[in-house]
Image (cartoon, rainbow, N blue to C red; front, top):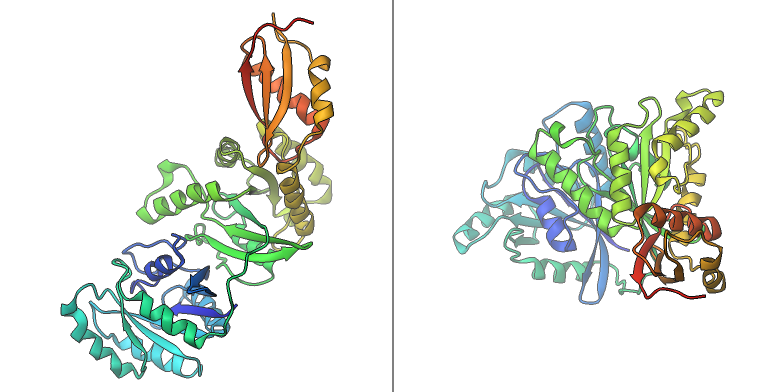
Length: 426
């Protein structure tokens, strides 16, 4: 697909425009400058046409530090990939000196540029737009991301310039999120999987703030993988941006099918890692556990890590564990294969003939009988159990374990609904 990149200095409303156009809150919007750091991708559907949109971090022409240079590198990658550029400026603050520098850089690319004057919320601000003609671009649009004003014209002009790609019914997209604490290696894992530096990687924890997503194909399956903000205890959240980032992760879990829980083997499993597993379990999502940075261990320590991980996550003992090194690309194919296996298990249907006979092989509940077991749903697998007495939680767990013994459902939560019927007579 054709690609449009959104660029501009910090705090001009690039992420607000991105969210407005893609119809999803993928990028965090906050008054603090420099919130966006990675390249955030979304798809635009307009008048039967489709194209990619990239949100980028704010230009750092006046700053010299390692993080700023990494963000600039992400902007450069987006510009290289773009067929068209949205150069966003702030209509309230007017033309800034740094924007002349950005304009010169963009003109050197020999690519079409739309100058988007944002925050033009009312007609009184329209005269300010004329000031931006000094930047030398002929296509200028006055918009308001907050009010949703002016974007129809922008999109109409966009599809005139981009190659014609019609909207197609997409194949099944498997959605996976990489979850874990700060500095567990989530962004490195994303970059390694897609073989591209999509997310900014920095030694300082909490570099990723937005949801950084990418699509790729593995063994003929189309996968969307999402890098997320590192989760931590609420008591340790000091800034509003951290809170918004964490809430965004909570919401994205509703949309995914499988969560990869990544943790640093040198730090071990802690409360936050188990909390992530509990969260995935409560939302009935597939789970894969990936101890990361095994390149820092000796081979003879692998079994110890596997055993300790199994013990720490015993309440989700159905989840596969795959040792990886995101940095060295160790175990990544096995990890991806495990996610595909879990995806299949989420959709698996149990043999109805075995289910019909299963009640007769069960240990009956106290003073009662199991009358019938039937599968009533997939993704996740769901079963209805008809019983003559009210079942206690320990017996329901026994049923769940028995179903797993017969049918597997590796990495998939098994939901059981009970239905009380009259007493059963043989």
